[in-house]
Amino acid sequence: MSVEVALKVALQYQRARGRGRRTGFVALRGGYHGDTLGAMSVCDPVDGMHADFPDYVPAQQFLPRPPRAWREGGDLVSDPAEVAQWIAEAEQIVARAADEVAGIIVEPVLQGAGGMFAYAPEALVALRGWATAYDLVLIADEIATGFGRTGRFFGCDWAAVVPDVMCVGKALTGGTMTLGAVVVSTAVAEVIGASEHRALLHGPTFMGNPLACAVATASIDLVTRSWATDVPRIEAALSAALAPAADLAVVAEVRVLGAVGVIELTEPVEIPLVTRAALERGVWVRPFRRLVYTMPPYVCTDADIAVIGAGMIGAVAHVHGGVTR
Ligand SMILES: *Cc1c(COP(=O)(O)O)cnc(C)c1O
Image (cartoon, rainbow, N blue to C red; front, side, top):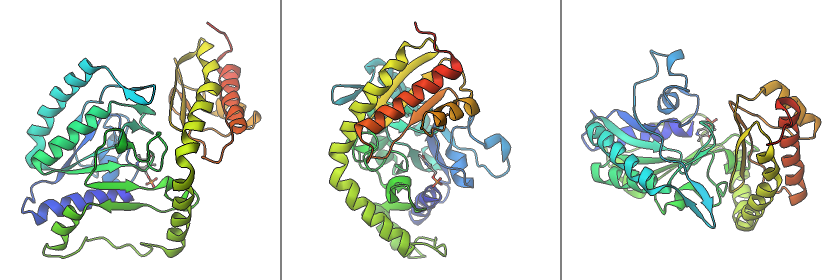
């Protein structure tokens, strides 16, 4: 729901600026922003649900997926030539769309449900530049990446980019209670505050629910105290635990970014069978497409991570064959 509100913030901002024709959005191919109507429209146009709700999903402008990035030392690196090519291509699309779109929405650095795909931080820097140049609202959907998950406190921190609007959810309450929030820059908030309506046109019954907010503040206290040691520790433990998967012939790639571990197969995962096989090894996973992945809670010990990694690998080998290279 946070994404719905963020889109409304961008639309209301543009109207307040006298640019009511700016009603669309720019998004990335491969993105995922949720299942509600507005959010669906900015999800990947092929893998999303556009075709299933054609009359309710407005057409948006999509940029190609930015070049992939991988961990090297403390950095998140990518191929500079691919980055330059992406920037050239994306810049044209944004320039052409600028008069008709209110904002740009992205999952910073890691596309989650769209494939657990890490991409070049330089792409975020470029998007920030275009958003500023055309006065578009840059929305960072940090629902999956926020609170340390990728190894920086926010995904945007990999690129030292400050968005105009940030969506948070999921880890906001440590995954224990339903709560989302939209964080808006003072500049954008002031434009909306000075507009005809003087306020954001949004106010559901349970907005700011005190119980959920109490859970969130308690969780944020815990996370801010320990994430900077927990996440690198989990990253190292995940790298070690998942490394043996690379020996399986059915495994295309093993990748780890912060507290996210992914085993990508060369074929679609037999989802019910792998889920069951992992459960039998004491591990609950939710594979999709060719991916078996984990985003473990930061309280996991190294021993827990070893169990998770062994369970994932064991399940893949059991169902898809344990043949090694
Ligand atoms: C899960 C997710 C959402 C959707 O959040 P809900 O609270 O389920 O609506 C949006 N964006 C990203 C990046 C997510 O991972």
